[in-house]
Amino acid sequence: MLSPKEEAPRELDRHLRIPHVGTLLTSTRYEADHRFGLPTIAFLMTPIILFTLAAALTLFAPASLKRSSLYRRTQAGLRYLSYKSWKIDFLRWFSPSLGVLLLGAAGVIFFLAMTLGPQPYYWPNTQTLSFGNSPPLATRAGWMSIACLPFIFLLGAKENPITLLTRVSHDQLMVFHRWVSWMMFALALVHTFPFIIYHLWKGDMYTQWKTSVFYWTGVIAIITQAWLTFMSMPFIR
Image (cartoon, rainbow, N blue to C red; front, side, top):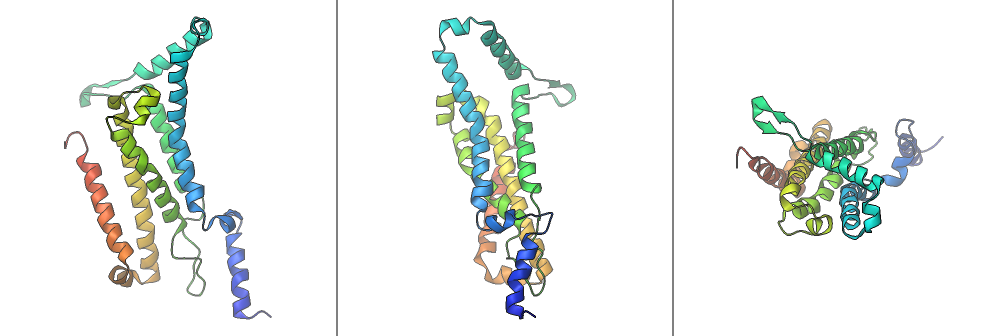
């Protein structure tokens, strides 16, 4: 018969290895920045690297390669992706190009999969057993949100290294600046609400608000971010 102190680690270990979670949580409880922040940076860097390579190929490819059928067909396909768009008459609006829409769709799939794919969303805490006060859903969304921040600054600047490397103009990058900003805001909301839900369940939301500086600074940050995001909408500007 084990004492309560000896039983607690066994119970903790059992919950961390429940079938729908797997043993991944055992090694990632304190590695959320590596598991979710760095992959977000890698995902956002991938199109920059690919467009940089394409720009370098355009500049430095030998004439014989540029005359080849494969090069010309590839170039024609990329131009089609760059220029094909649709007009929505009743909105008096032209959609972004097909290539931009495909990049946006890849972003939506990536962020949804990274945010909602891993389980659990909340630790299976009880009144006597606690895995921690940070819900996994909030933790990963927070790291992914902060990983978007440097790209927002880079994409929003008129003189930026992305334009220098890819030869894509600042005006063409603005659509990605807006989309990444909205994704960062959405992830910030996903980061915020699980904490509120958890502490409402725990019954100490009022105490946390009165005593924890993290909630005060967090509310200021989310309100400021909401203001910047919504006030940048074209019809408001």
